[in-house]
Length: 98
Image (tube, rainbow, N blue to C red; front, side, top):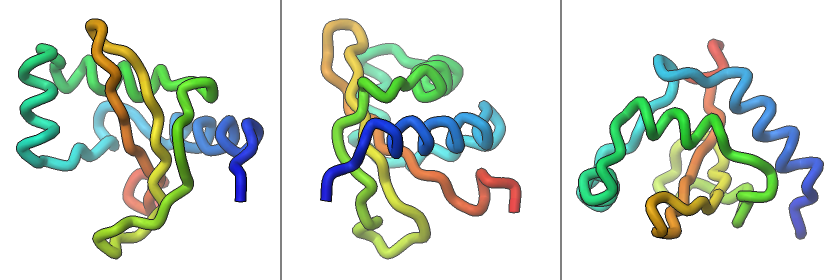
């Protein structure tokens, strides 16, 4: 099943409507930490990149969480400092405010 640009747009609208710097939770793993360090990306800048995602940045999804957690992952790709970076986000109850 293919995801339409309308579905991507609706997801981003819902995500951005629920998200801000205080509600976005970042997965803490070495791979992510290494990328942030090498590219000198602060938490504030991460949030700016995430909230700046556009439908044209869409790469994949929605995808089941391979760890069995609630919610579906959406994958976006953007270029930061001439490096292709993939950002996985999902809307969960905790950032919906319920």
